[in-house]
Length: 562
Image 1: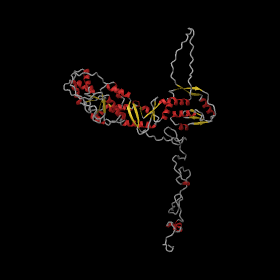
Image 2: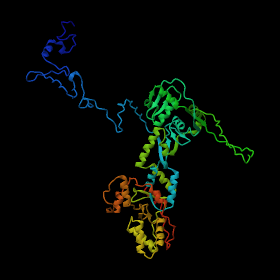
Image 3: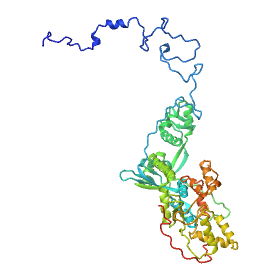
Image 4: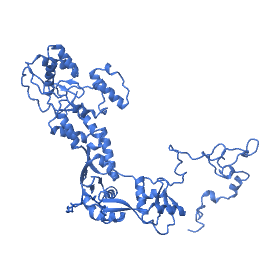
């Protein structure tokens, strides 16, 4: 196609339409107008034809400059006072200035640590559990299982933590034979042995020595402990730094930043005089039995000469030599590894492995809220000892344990005092033991107090009447009734810091049982073994009239509401 045949407007100019026009049109549009260099906007004149201009700053004006004034980007200084002087930096609750104001570096953030991926069960200690079982065997009183759970959880030494690695993981538990401490790596356990058990195998003593000789341009001084750390070019500096950092609970890098380097001759000489004693290590050995050698008898007039102390002929070692000998000969026999381990909770909380401590912390927190592992462990132990477990009020009520079998009394021919006691408990459910004795004494005034106590104790020991730990009585049903006494509720509210909504005497027994918090901790969990330590044990009496043999209780009664 020739140029003559091309349509009009078709060419090789690909610029936009506004750029193809002449520039004179756009230049004339903006001529004679003023624009703000800061904002790029047009400065519009006022009604009187003058442009807006900011007034000059007054003399003595202490206000901070606004944004853009004086040709700079100013900001409001919150730390400036009325007179323009800078305020001192804010201080924390301890009275010290912030770390940045003191010129100290910001501590590094702790890395995120995930809890250990393993199975953990909280179990009761067998020694403590054995004392509780012996106490329960001496009494017929029913105690709440939750009270025993609280006792174990409040005493870390009475609980055991059983860690078990999952099959799909390669977790290994390294244990110390000397104290039972557990770590997740061999390096952590070796550091524990060197720090805590090196003195168990070596005798440590300080002996005089010559001051260090050499050229020391500077020495380190700790302002916190006011102790000399030493010269960085001396061989003892590294161990001294690690020792002081461990005692301060800091890493060696963070502790080294807090030290002061002094170069004056007086400081260097003072450090030399402070290290005129050296720490010497001697390996402990079992003493061999000494054979007595016959000696000639001394004259009667001569006093025996005092024996000079025998010199210690054991070889001496420095700190590095003692650690090397410990690693070579002693350390292999003090470490074991396995996929499961069981140790006291108080010892597991001192583990150097943070993932293990986090798993234990979260598990104990869950056990405080909803005790599962320890609760089922105690129930299994009580069942193994043939104790009776039952729930009060309903199948989901509080669980109790007792050393009696709940057996309803169905004898037709029975003595008067037994019949009066059973009828009174039936007509006055949730009464106390004192109320029962007073009612029987009133109904049978000719009965002697000793005989009355034996007859009523027979009903308790045979399980015909359930006696709770607080003295409340109930008949042996599938779910015997239970309530807390007003004094007990008051103590629990005071321990929890909750004000009572109504007076205890204004509530009925049913309302008292309903308002009692189900998941609230007892105010005095330690009182359970104290009450059971002095049980109301009476010699098992024979009733005045031999009642008929009651039917054996079914297995569903003591173990109901699982």
